[in-house]
Image (cartoon, rainbow, N blue to C red; front, side, top):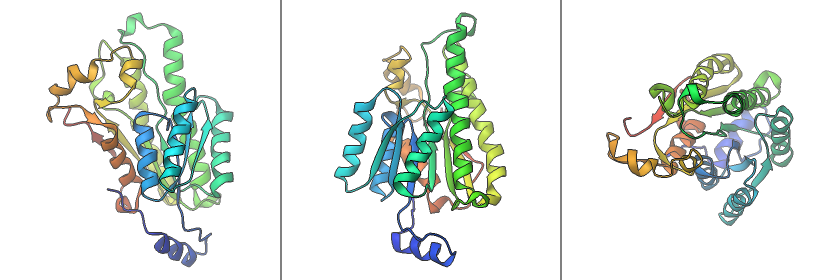
Length: 270
């Protein structure tokens, strides 16, 4: 469970620092319309955060997440954004700041996978789109977060969480070596960016989910993957998106105030 400070505690601390004492924190989540991003958005709202989330094609699902947050008494915003397009990413952050005034946390969760293939059979357009979304998209999101959160640039500090995958350690041979490679790049970004932004009051961490029950497996052409591989994990089952969301919220919150440059496995021991 994350440990976000209460509104009164946050207001008091920011007032003492001479900053805008707005008591409510805000989080921006890319890929927030489904899977881990959706569960992270809903959990953030339950913790009292205002939520901006992005989507590409799943507008109805994104609006459903917003409606569920509003039903919880929260505040949310959904913005169409292809993270591989710089103008989209800048526009997403602009919209969040226009709505909430500031951003305190960023979760780079947008990513794609493709049907299982060996590298020798992967066409160039697949590789280019995989790298554009998963690597370039994450770097653009992290760059904008650095620009908006860094204290030397007028930000209030905060936290960034980048979504990696246990595939970065397993390699995903014969299936998704392209996807695995993109997540390895994210692991490296966590380490370097944490060192860059620590002096700016910004913590940067990553989460490596394992086999998680989400829609991504179907989009990768293996809708039975969870049922087939879940029992092979040391814990004997696949994970749930809500379990990954708990780790993300902890890394965003005050309970992880001395954690930066870390990548946490949420993978049932895989």
